[in-house]
Image (tube, rainbow, N blue to C red):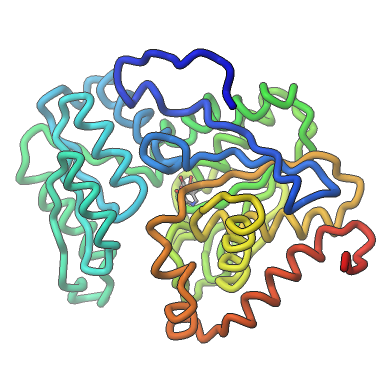
Length: 345
Ligand SMILES: Cc1ncc(COP(=O)(O)O)c(C=O)c1O
């Protein structure tokens, strides 16, 4: 139980951050693995941090004013975070989504006061829905006076939120004594903020970027990616300034197994990218037995993934993986982290 008094805050934007660090001693009994539970932010993900940071930066620089409009293409966590953050700053929010977007996520964005624009036809030239969404954002920017796009892929205020928030909080909680830090990447705002903090403070911490097989970030080869949240199909502007010490690429099977075992062993229901980070943490522990303390991020909560990552039928139909395949990888994660590689049972 928390024993500190409940803070009184002006609004939920002020309640972003200061998430707990949880010791995963059931899943990782031999090495200290600390999970920063970003799903305990008010928008249920780490995206709350860059949403408030990018919005306040735009207001501070005067490129946006109360009564103005933010237009963004997002069908996930950033959409939810911006919907709340904009409502609380008296800014309008138009969220451009496509027909594939998770229904309950879109409903949440709408419920938090945003206008939803659905793009249902792919771009005629490329056949791509994301390209069509970005084209719609450009049209809306022309149509709506006083509107801006925050461009999370290149906005320095995205990475800054993780430098000043996520990584600072982890460093302060651990007294800076941390051997390895692992985080998943998409825009690379998270890993970029961690990188600059670790370098600035001279921390002796290895920074591991966990990326999806099929993502082109950090020299990856383009391929199909079926799980949302992790990886990118293009090299983001922010990623050009980030050098992780190591990149671990994880498959869909490894993400699903990691998410399921985290839920079953630690009671933390998380999304697919967190599952990938759990798998990567187990791999690091096996390869480097001298490592004493790792930190990982729980990037978001698992509710939007119940009908995909946590559903055996969906996994079989869409990824051609049987429940036994997933269970085998869950066992591999548990075995991976025994230092001498021997079975524990
Ligand atoms: C589900 C999920 N995975 C991974 C990430 C890391 O993404 P980024 O590189 O954009 O910071 C995020 C960001 O908050 C996220 O919400």
